[in-house]
Length: 561
Image (cartoon, rainbow, N blue to C red; front, side, top):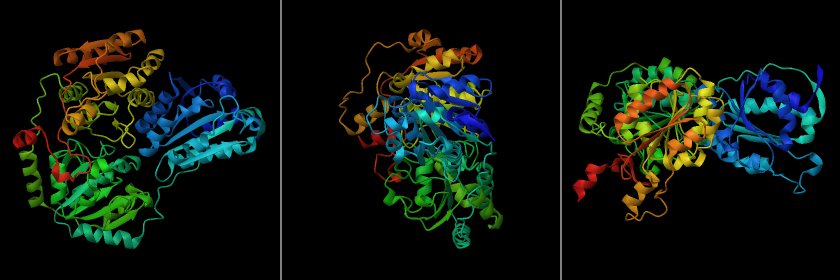
């Protein structure tokens, strides 16, 4: 046992937890910690972002890409509050993240001191837990608890706020190995398991919905075996992308507001729907009260609070998805459903995608990225039309390949997330897809990528409007384009050059192809500004609050005229 300062304890605890990278931004109250980081820079890599929000998104992207806990740091006051959007993003999508902030001295708390904020109170609704450490003797165990909470059960963000005097005070420190995080199995009830198996075995038209919980539980292989054994088609949510291969013959595409007609119509033909690691978001279910009314619903989720929250189910098993799927697959009878697959195949034929992939459109750009990366790249996105095109037209073959803000829908997420993903998985090609509206929110993080020569490829799908909002204004607001036209003269290629990256503008698909090939070879951050039409839309679509079977596209609108 030895005596260490609070700052030394923070660094030693990070090393204990296997942390190799921290994203952050220094300031007055956290200076002691940064001084220690300087002394340990050969052990812990610190990425100085352009903004604290970028640090939180980078830590989130790192966590999503690697499966490890992402770590970010910020100083007190505005430094801490600038992390909030990133913390909320991680919370909504169940991403393990530890945010370490510093605060004013204990004696200055509650006195409106310079850059003082009750950050624990601020983040209470958007973290699994938040701590303020006012005693150096409690610091090590608090940090260890934070990592355990972030990783265990349903993952999520944890914030640890440490007063400045604690970072300087001294305490005994004894190294400890991290606690082993065990899969949640104690909640798996035999009666619940029997009921779920009984319903699934009686199914003639089973359908599987795969969510982000499958990714979090590392249950992709178990899901494949389960789908094969019950011979069921599989759709996914936005967060479930890659957990079931997009190239598999069982795959029917994404479910929900911008899901495929095959998934949205097919699931309504099912007699049993098995939902694994998904929380019945309104973007997935449409009108929740009318979701799969003719089917029995079986839900598998690690979080008991999600059972019967949005949709009332007929059976539920609470526990780790990997373990539950193993148990069910071991016990359930193998079956074949040729007639059911014939129905699904007929839907695939009837609603085959006929989108033009030869013109300069969002889908064509995504499809070209898929071709040029041979389907192996890690894709991050911002939020909007480009996000949906990226979900629809890139075929994801592995978990942790598609990183996007699903629950919070955070514009400006992508650049930071792509930096975190590339740092965490340096051997992967990492491409961030953004719209022009999203990119301008946090494009300052291109400077971060340039500073460290992190070779992300930034593709801006630039229609000079807030595309998704404009789509809604076109369809539901009488084409009143209130504050959605971005008719300014920002040149993103020049901005990229000014920030230290390479900027290229593409106005045709051939120009884009040439630019992307160049970006793959350059080995430095590249921004490709892709000019598309302002009225390109994401199809199909389910209007907000409507049932999935009302899914429509441009052809349906034409038929009604």
